[in-house]
Length: 173
Image (cartoon, rainbow, N blue to C red; front, side, top):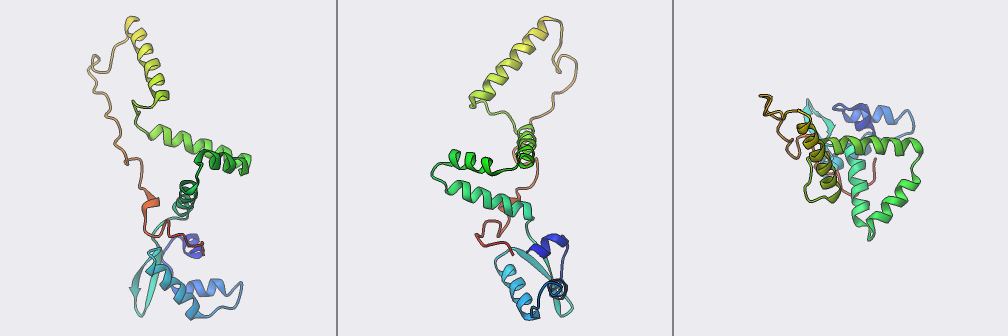
């Protein structure tokens, strides 16, 4: 899978074989069998090209890694403790990337009125809006503008972790 992910394009058995042979001796039939097994498991799709196939990853490496992390976290009897331990293993650069990712996800999420933290934030915004109205500010409707509709769940992007094989439990190849 590593070769298929690295190239990020459809590949033939011959291309993978030649690349692997730079590092070690390996038989054509071994590479063909592994790619066929990956196809059978739903990790790659293939398209006939003459007498051969071109194989292409069904899911990204990032989606595979996310599915593994989610699977491990979900299997924990104490998910919060597992996250704390995981964050403790991260480098400062990884923690910075995590903070950026959380900010991106939060920016895309619609507000949940059942979440006490979000209710407090909404109450603060309502209070600020009330103060603004008292100060002469108007709402979008009063200005003749239509407020933007809330973003529907799932519009932010595809759910790559739902791809076939993303949580197959196998080791990366």
